[in-house]
Image 1 (tube, rainbow, N blue to C red):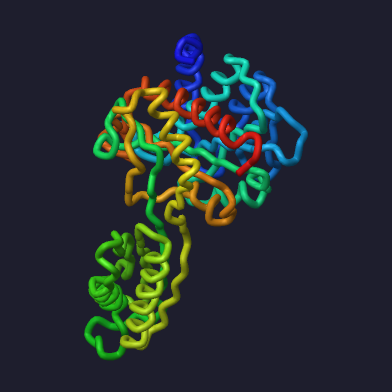
Image 2: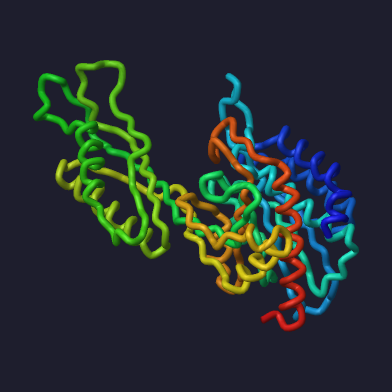
Length: 383
């Protein structure tokens, strides 16, 4: 496999460079979709696209038997809108250009090896991961209806997995964004007793959130990330304001408890100040549920590709990923994500994020071996 992969390196590097230089933000990945589709079609895969959103699915069908195993490889597509060298641009600072390259490279490698897969293989290129909506759209489109095993990948920061190593799972936490609005009336600065100060309400929410406690054995946090009240005149007491909260928890059960306690704080603060506070959840991703069967396949692939010393057990990270909507909505899917070490620094979402690109070649070999190992073990009985 390694010898075949070496012959593909120039093409793989070209794919990465194109994707890296032509990032597109969430729900705008149209040119990216066209580029990916051209590669999938060139290599003989059946392609599905969607009339109302970006994204594509490449299908490598080797049997018409309905009982055949289907393995999925998923890559996210969107870039972040960031200021880079003084200019705002769509910037791949979360590594999605690398993820797409690994998925396409896996397809190219298996094709070059002329693999006769005893089942169906899907390459799923999903939009809008950064806003936590793309996976739900793919579910809505029925992309996952026949998928038995699902594999994803995410480049890892240097603090989590160093270059030359890889983990067989990423235990992401749950993440929720909540937005709220305080609806009151402005007042005169000389008559504070006649109005409610929205700034004081915001401050009270922040203070009361410090008293939210869960089981300390499960990591969690809640914090106010945006707050706004007041206008141009400093002698007016603002009666209205807005805020955003960021909630994190390492398990889905802990997140449910955290949401309940935060909602209680907001409601009781509104009652205390006798002011209306409206709030709602705006974004949500679920904590990882990793399949033992899928994780074992990837663990074996890592050791075959890079050696036993390179294998890292599934890692815990506070970040979130909408990949986990797939197992939340389709519990029958056996899934895990490859955590690829690549000396990524200064960090994910940093405008000048960089990593060792040769790690992408290792990621392709690991993913290809994971697919092969899965079909070898489960291709005949789907169990």
